[in-house]
Length: 247
Image (spheres, rainbow, N blue to C red):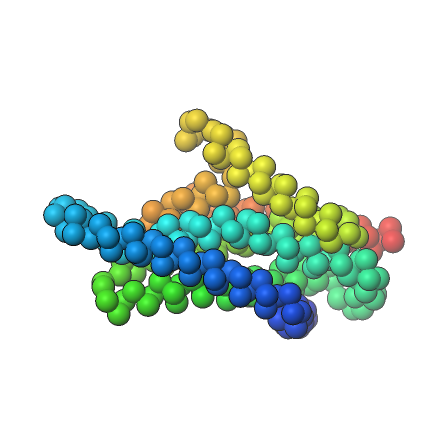
């Protein structure tokens, strides 16, 4: 049943015309930034060739691109999570879904996986864009895959938080604004922290993405993203469970 709900959410996302408009705009933005970074790299390539440990195309072009995508995802994910539960509650279809023989766990996990699969297409598009560089240069596949994995985990964290906030209201716009405010607040805690070991900075998902962006696979970052997703998914499940009991 989880995969049935996930498939339904995935298809409904692609059925909306606004989704295709957003995807088109995203590809234009990412392609523009990618070409700008590539042009800047080519202009200084002669100077870089004289350095002993000069950064390659992956480090100079791909890593900054994934860093930009991470910031865009912070603003984009709330636009999609706002409709997951809030819109169904507003349209009164959530009552029908909860009246069916489907548990709150299945509803939350199904919607979460459906959205994550959709967002995976955006990440895959960026990855394919960077892989085009392999036709003319050698890529650092370890750094490239590390960035893609980190971006996927970061996006999953955004989706889990947005899904929980979507379960708190019947107004999708309010859900989007609240999720964006929460993510923006977490991002501010990172950039405002002077000390890299600051406890508040450790709460920001973007600070844990930095290791992946540098090609480092830190077990602490893996655990953070896992616990972050589990915590907000459990909160969303608890919220739906309370709605089912207390109406």
